Amino acid sequence: MAKITTETAYKAAMERIEELLPLIDENTPSDDKNLIELELLSNLVADYDDEHYPIKKTIFLGVS
Image (tube, rainbow, N blue to C red; front, side):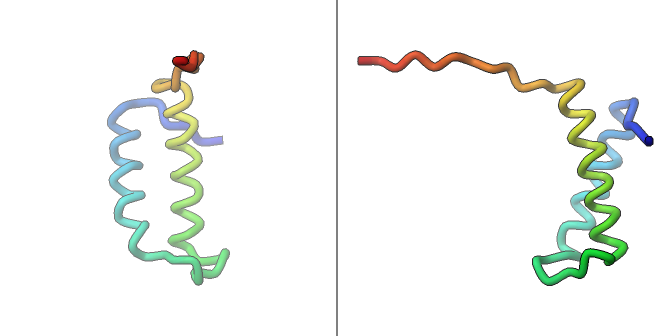
């Protein structure tokens, strides 16, 4: 499966996602080429984010 491996590719994918977002809405059919591309790129970006920009888990201690 494809994988984003560089920051340049990551930024290009993010830019393409921004271009695709206005082209779809909740009525877009699931076989629409723009929606398919958006879903694929979004998954690739999410994988890259998980690997390179992990969200650190914190423990919240409530203040009384």
